[in-house]
Length: 167
Image (cartoon, rainbow, N blue to C red):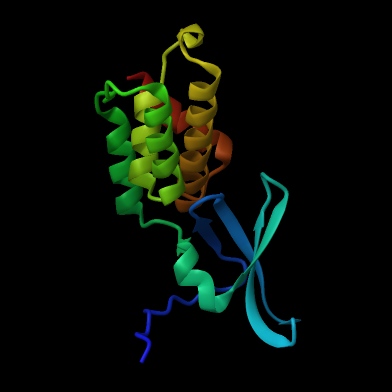
């Protein structure tokens, strides 16, 4: 007997977070015939990447799709940004892997840790290309979720994050 996973219902027009792609919007919940099997699919659009994912409803829990975080979780993530950067003395490749794992976890607090740890004030020259790429990816993920959670523009969310980091 397979154990039943708790079902989370998603609605068309709702914003969701797909751990490895960030914030997307459910455009449709449809049935499609694939290889002779009828599947119920969640159609999620990611405007920024101009990408559409079709996720079988049965696999939604496995891929980690979740609703936008509660304001309390977002506030915890924003508080994390105020903390002191924790840079571990590991080779960059290992740290980069840890950062990528945190970003792809989809957890806003873990993403905020990456943003905090890789944030540099004006002097971007001291940051390598790959460091900047990971920082920008984490920053964009966090900003897009903050924007949807607080019902504001992505620009305002970016300004808010930068003002917290600059303190």
